[in-house]
Image 1 (tube, rainbow, N blue to C red):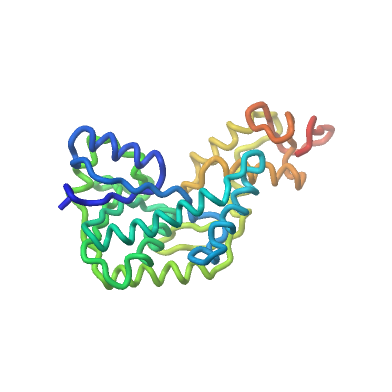
Image 2 (tube, rainbow, N blue to C red):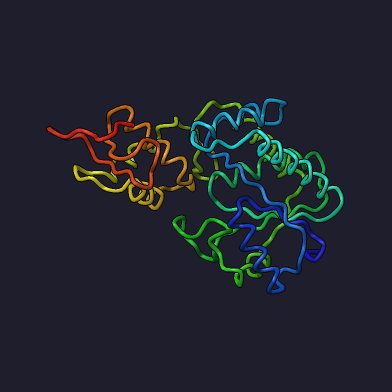
Length: 270
């Protein structure tokens, strides 16, 4: 079955791990359909409509104002969903997922294109045997040599599960929220500022590189939000005065941040 399957993965790094495993012969070479947009942040309500790609592009332009992604990138993402639906109609499909919210939301959206009938959809869950909640949770965190073990635990998604997951996507998409988290098998919804406290916890009254603060927050975070999101929130905290910013406008590479204190002022307020 896996020799003929189409593999669906979320993220460039995950696709790279799977390609390396295929190069080693496990699994056998097969088409990989790679998705990129992460649904744990930003608006979801317009996805599946004509304005869906533009709505996502507008959101990501806030996070990446110096190099905003174009609508074309999100149009291409929509094409990949159509390709996934076509693959499921014509042969086996393996969906590689992790326990984090982006992956679960992506699976839910995939199920909207598989429903109402998909004869052979299999779920490959990237969780190490016996791993606790703090263990590895993403395909990209596995070595190519471990892929065979994950494949051995793949399970079929039946029509009821597919329909249920598709319904979860519809429910989650209707909730206006900036941040989504996985909790006890469900998605919870929060404001854009949910992780601001985590960022502030990484700071003190001494200047430290902005990139260091972001990296520490990513390490301590219970979701895979990405450095772009945390960089955006760091800028928001500086604009609001909850952090001081030193360095060139718009550049994280040479920027430093600290908590406000008496007698201190930023060299460049961002």
